[in-house]
Amino acid sequence: MAMEYFSGISDALRITFVQVMILANAAILIFLYGMYINLKKWGAGAEEYGGSGTGGKLLAFPRMLIRQMSAESHGHGQNIVVTLVLDILLQRRIMRRSPVRWFMHITIFIGWMALFVMSVLMFLVEVTHMALHMGPDPEVFREMLSLPNDIFSYILLTGIIIAIARRLFLQKMRESTIAYDSILLGGLTLITITGFFADGIRNGTFWGMGLHYEWAPPAALFHVIISLLFCIAYIPYSKYIHMIAIPLTLLANKGGE
Image (cartoon, rainbow, N blue to C red; front, side, top):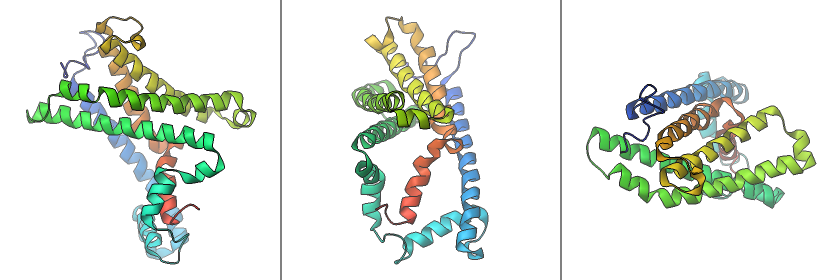
């Protein structure tokens, strides 16, 4: 059953579980290449800031980051654990500026990261079961994740709705919104809705719009492909790189307050 779930639209357009794994690895490689480009770009700035002693451009930024994090008098001097918890995970800087904006960010962050972790776990279970014939049954494990998946999906959807409402009804946000922002928010919305849609068809809930189960595989396939492309491969080339860049900046500055 687990291997057939990504079977595709028809026999003529069939895609196997192995092919989906190939797509996943391709998305990861595109992501890694994008991070390589970013590290080289950040490294050029690190060499300018830290001098020639930082080494080659690719390693310049990581070396400068480590040096700044270990320097006692640099930045705010905040403990790294405090920075990780308060500034990165709980995003207190945003909270102090705007509680509504903080709630929007934290729901998107928590929802996205939780769903990502569960997807990775499901991936590992599927691969382990397929290659080694060991570990929990994929279908049983998928059912175990069903409730937390629903919970965190609705948490993510809540943040998305707030983000859309802010850009529609707040004049300042509406005027500052560019096409780039709309593409990112639209893509995240599409991924979330198609996830609900695919799961709704499979389980026969209202999100399935009454469609027959035979539409579950193509719906799931579409959701998986755009998720791989948008939530993994596209990140280093988009504004969403701030999910990586901002935490690194906070760590380098030893806090954000």
